[in-house]
Image (cartoon, rainbow, N blue to C red; front, side, top):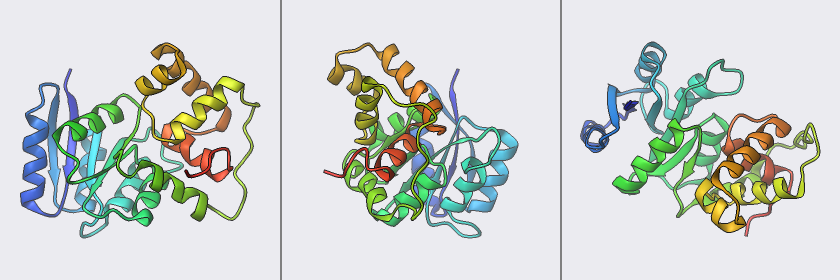
Length: 219
């Protein structure tokens, strides 16, 4: 089964390039294109793609607003959204992840990383460009909400604390397994447990929680 993707970017040449790159992958199919955020949201709600790939700066409504409409807090059956942008700014990544994005990439990330991000989002995972992961996730420690984050529903085990730290630093499941000398299935089990205990929906929100509660500090 191919991963069904919608691409939204107001620059036709960029959008065409992204579509060509994704369609060249053996297991990815672009099923819709949009030149603005409003059209992207309409398409996504109608077609229910596996992954939405959105630019940040778009007319009508921007990529952040489109992401929030499809994947934000309170959205039933949220879609997977990866945000892709030219702009390497903390404020953008913070807003994108807060809006529910499962990935954040720069447009110079390259074909391999773009494909990885789409696959990760489709699998319920998340990928943030490695070149900016630590700094951008660290922004949560500096600009998080004034109110303290909720305590976990149930205390974390020592192993879950270790998994929490690695997720917050942008490690993939495979990297976590190698680093902690555990199986991939064990990593997935711990991450599922973390989401339940923290009351979050994905690993990006796990990372946000870790920084906002000072469980993990930038650097």
